[in-house]
Image 1 (cartoon, rainbow, N blue to C red):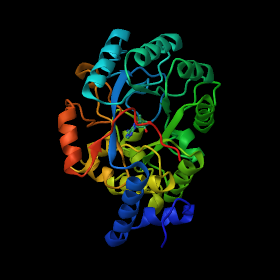
Image 2: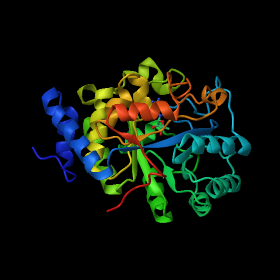
Image 3: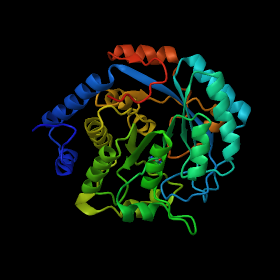
Image 4: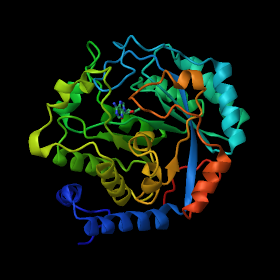
Length: 348
Ligand code: 5AD
């Protein structure tokens, strides 16, 4: 069977259900071939900076949800953020990714100043991942020089989405419309999903991948759902609410399938081997991801004392990330090399 970027959603679903290893080899080879041809052997490095773990939302899977009391909340200072941006530059990475919970203590003008300063004083591309902020705020940050924005839509199943993302009183923002607005503002746009949310079906994940294609995403981040016992979706009763034989498993194998299919439908996208995958399979997770479609790594550069409090899900790597030297050695050992420059989205 031909696998190309126009693969119908029903065929995508068949691949998600495929168990035959020989068949799956074909999927991995196709994704890896497209990756090599379209974005080459460079692996772009993004320094991930978790600037605040405050959050006003109550997402049922996430450890940063506001109900969670057993978490020491922090917000990095401008000086701390700037020092980390310098460190990222020194490490030779091309991008700083500033991520946080939905924290309105991150004042729009305050962050604009930081973005402007990083853009003036370093060669870094700036990616923001700060949740559902207003179009005005997103516009302000773009004007200050931000290059990219990440906002996963998590699932395209509207009922499942509503169930696990309680809306703020009086607000019904949908993430797809924010993604569209980001595009219009001139951002490179990233999105993605969790894989294996209780209640998530094969056909809905196939639909999600179809949406990656429709949105022509510049960046796609996918990872397995990891039950967090400090959240409602981490309780045994929730885990039993899965949709019988149509439930997508939250396995590494399923994540590789989604990653490979994402590469196939968005050939030039930047696709990271994500942390959640590294958590499920520390030894091989990221290596396999890089050989099945991924072309980006996001080493965590958050200061250790804060990193320990950014507990989105349990088991998230807390240890110091390997240095650039180690990462290059690892990349060369698998026939790849560290990317040079900001590593933005190619378009041709
Ligand atoms: N398991 C896996 N991924 C999670 N995220 C949040 N909570 C979990 C969890 N329990 C992911 C979401 C979010 C990203 C920052 O982390 O997809 O967009």
